[in-house]
Length: 365
Image (cartoon, rainbow, N blue to C red; front, side):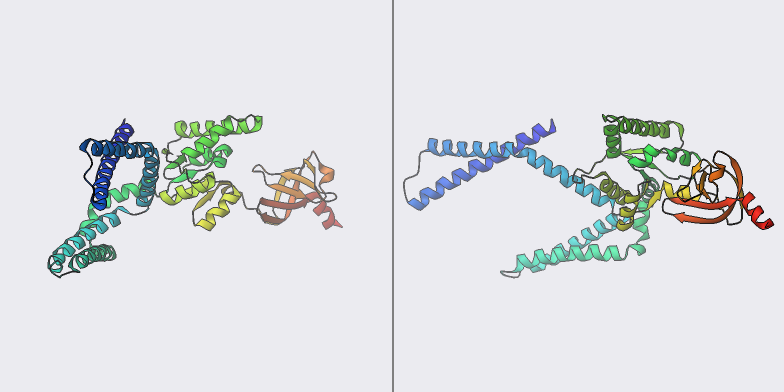
């Protein structure tokens, strides 16, 4: 309804401009050619025709006007979100004071012949800029003004700053539910609308594996909202000018000043380059694994042979691989091993050990 009303207004504006333009053009042509004036009917008919043409043009290009206005509005909203409320209030106050001072000075400048009007405009704009810049540089001293917005600033900080933004991979992974249930995850959990859309596309995929992953991600989100006590916020705004989901996540994290929760290695590296904080689930899992020192003893079930000759492979409950030298002969058995060394890699932690029985035998010899 609003768009129809605006398109009608644009048509009327275009009609008025076209009518006036044609009418003025006819009068100018008559005066320049030094001919008798045209008839009133001809003048009105031509003006109406010109007004109708220009009005229709304005009506037809109005969708482009709406699109540009929407993009401009999104840009303004995104920009203002990055500016603290106190800075906006102080800047506007300084601008108003500067413009008032410039207007008072302009009263004297208007009397200067030829250049007075131009000097008045320049001085007014300069004093407006000077007032804004001066107030922003001295905002720490203006506690009586910034104090009015302290409560709102705290509310914004509590709702936006510290927000945890989930990406698609960490939702499908599912471990975020257990982490949130322990109480280690603080603040608001933000689920972007474009991530939900990506999950929906994955859930509707013709590939069985992708479809199961997408449905698992939707189930995890439903579980987070219903079973956990942490606040969950769905961020509906999309960034149509950015095609990739990872780039949208980075921009959203900058706007909200939050942290991206992921287990995507590539996204982690890009965020580090962009200066965006990241909480990597895989790094957390590696950090909380129990520390094992050389010389410690443990029980290990050898389940398969290793890459090197005679090696056997076992796993701890958290998935840490144990490479047992000479453990191939014990495949299928649970034996006591002694840790010889620990290797930390990008993929995780790897423990090297040897059977305790073999160590005892070598000591006897």
